Amino acid sequence: MLEHKSYVISWNLTRRCNLACEHCYIDAYQGKDDPGQIARVGEKVAATFSGELSTQECFTVIDQLAEASPQALLILTGGEPLLRRDVFDIAGYASQKGLWVVVGTNGVLITETLARKLKEVGVKGMSLSLDSTQPEKHDRFRGVQGAFRNTMEGTRILTREGLPFIIQTTLHPNNLQEIESIANLAHTLGAKVFNLYFLVSTGRGAYTTTLTPTQYESAMHQLLPLQKAFAGKMLVNAKCAPHYQRILYETEPTSPFLRTFNLGAGGCPAGTHYLGITPNGDMTPCPYLPVYGGNLREKSFKDIWENSEVFINIRQRKNPVPPTLSSTPVFSPSPLVGEGRVRGKEDGNDRKEWGEGGIGLGGRCGACEFNSACGGCRARAYGETGNYMAEDALCSYEPGKYDFKEISFPGAATYGLEEKMDLVWTQEAQEAISRVPSFVRGMVTRSVEKMAREKGISTIDTELLQEIRNRLPAHKLFARPA
Image (tube, rainbow, N blue to C red):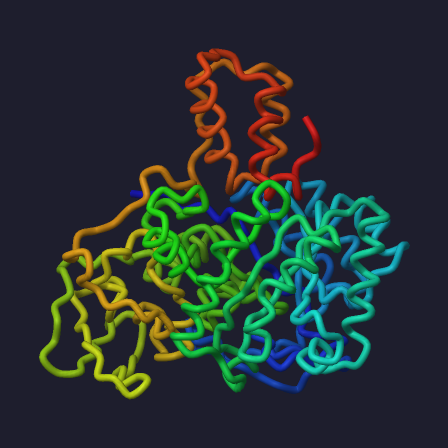
């Protein structure tokens, strides 16, 4: 049995927020109490988000995370996590337990004192939201006047205090033409990483105008030259857009930017390497996927990760029987994952409809040659159809272009690989590699040993590690110099 490890955990500590972003997937609110309710779909139980986990309950969850996923990357986010008075206690405790702690914030509340305190308790970095280079446009999207100004000041404070940060941008029709300018601004501000998020229609995002498949594809093509332009200076990523791997492959089959996750996850790690925790302790394969495997007040992290229905099902991405082209529009959802809906015409053109071939990805995703390298966004599939194993409707690719032969990226960087050392590593080199986040450590270890063999080197030292690290700017966000 393949072992799936939770390398990255996104934990929404609160739904409270000081902004009112129109796309918020968690439907965050301003104020002290939240009367709203949602349904825990997997458990068929109604639960409010007003009952945030207490400080002690958070410590208990951290103990379980550290035991099940040593050195996992823990993203503390919200809402606005800095609104929790115990955020320093939670971050510090997680850091002491060996987890790699970063904080996701809108950037508005950052002060010198706060940045120093976060650094003191062991936070490795911050992620800040920036959705336009135009203050009024950013403020309108975030729902509060002055948000842009405060976020800009936040980046300057973090730079002065020596706390690395990344810039997160949510792509929507109003900033589609700003991708390059936002990336340039992110680099000028000193960001180590620029993540471009493709909107998933959950929470308030379900009521926000999203991109058409044509715009989606156009945006991904805009990222190609940016990745090359900022190589070695700032990492550029497409998030919630696993189809970007197909774009890369079709443009440059040997692109150094090709990425994938092991164990058949392709470009979407939901439930295989990644998970989300809500403010009240519900656990989901992805923060954008409102289907829950259980609650951490009632069950252990390990039990939910290994035994809950949604986590088990979402890992079954291979169809045991090849999907067939249906003569009529058909969508036959897996009985395990609820109801789907027929996909109709798009942009005025008739489209082929793909039937299901059994448990596994449905629709075009199940039939696609890029199934193992991409696999589509599971949260977006759910948002569009109510079935997290359905096809990703924002992908414009029709299977068959490559004669239905599976396409893989043997030379691509693969996240989630087990750490394995075949060559001799000095003690200093072993200590240095231990400071690389666990979800990329196996990949980095293999890259280092591959380079060593090419150079005829039999012993890995810190000098060679530094050479590799300089080529992988993402790791600079988390690792101290060797």
